Image 1 (spheres, rainbow, N blue to C red):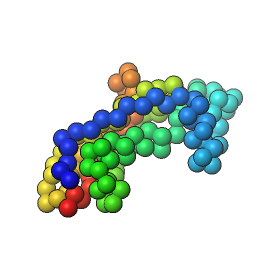
Image 2: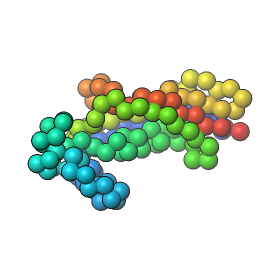
Image 3: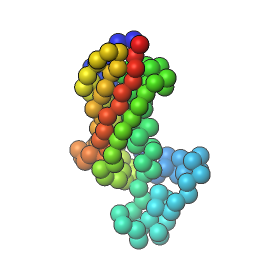
Image 4: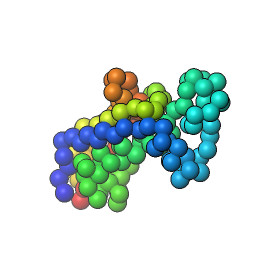
Length: 127
């Protein structure tokens, strides 16, 4: 497969998604749920699990390089800001280089207001 020049995925993460993720991931940390702890915590409200945002990167990379992402993908990211549900998150993967069969992408996730939630790089061997 040839690497696409870019890929973009947008999803809405609402509190019901966060609650279902918490159960599936066995992560019942009260900062992610509508609890008094979340409202008294550092953000003043519940935050989505970081892995929910990161999953959008994986979806964008699958769109960009197909099965090569699952077979030989590598990822390095840094969280920049929390995602507060309900939030519309867009993950963008922009081709940085395609050298010797390895496609490397710049990654960014932003909310609908343009706040950067996550940045990084992702790469996959295409051959």
